[in-house]
Length: 67
Image (tube, rainbow, N blue to C red; front, side):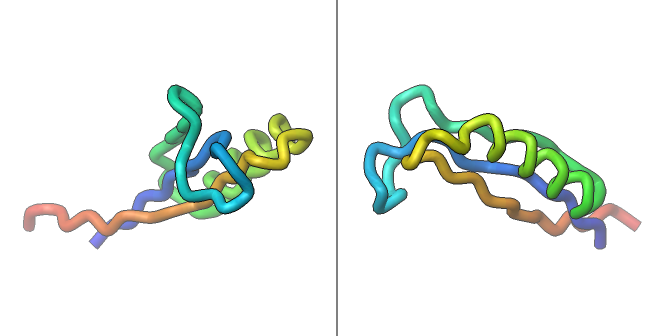
């Protein structure tokens, strides 16, 4: 099994972080290592750090390759 990582998030409508503003969602990746995803997360988080309603997370997916 192989794992890939993604950075997801964006600017939300409120501090409850339940609904993204229209057109404000971002999905960055895939990354082969968590370290690469963390580096991308830091860059995008730093770029939006002045926005109180911006939030980003790292998520992963499991891939089953044919044998």
